[in-house]
Image 1 (tube, helix red, strand yellow):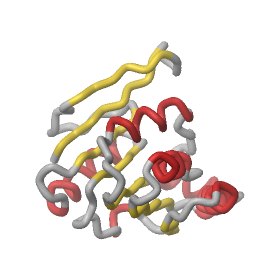
Image 2 (cartoon, rainbow, N blue to C red; image 1 turned 90 degrees about the vertical axis):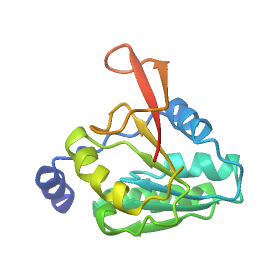
Image 3 (tube, one colour; image 1 turned 120 degrees about the horizontal axis):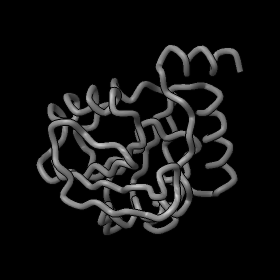
Image 4 (cartoon, one colour; image 1 turned 135 degrees about the vertical axis):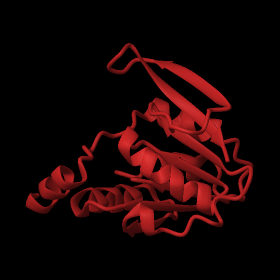
Length: 162
């Protein structure tokens, strides 16, 4: 727990799970067909990838989580879900994303700004990036969906195409 607290303070990233209804909408918004390579960066407890694998069992799913105790929570949740997901305890900024077809993120604006440069360098044209609530600075979403609930009365799913 001490390591988790230190990492959260150092990274300035709180653990806030994506509500299940939002996770389902994010997966639907990705427009998956069932054979894509999908990533969740800052994957938390793995619920978005679990939902994606249940809806599209043929996808190749990889989750990246840096905080050890949250990674362990995700590993356990995935184990109980009985779906196959590549689960990495790693910094998403060192993960090679060149083969990605879709990427899920629920990251704070400062992290999205930093991530945007990496995505510009590595993603193929047409790769879809689905963000929960927060916008990228330089890219404009091709689709925005409002979902009732959340802190401000609603949550947003933003879909970007690189």
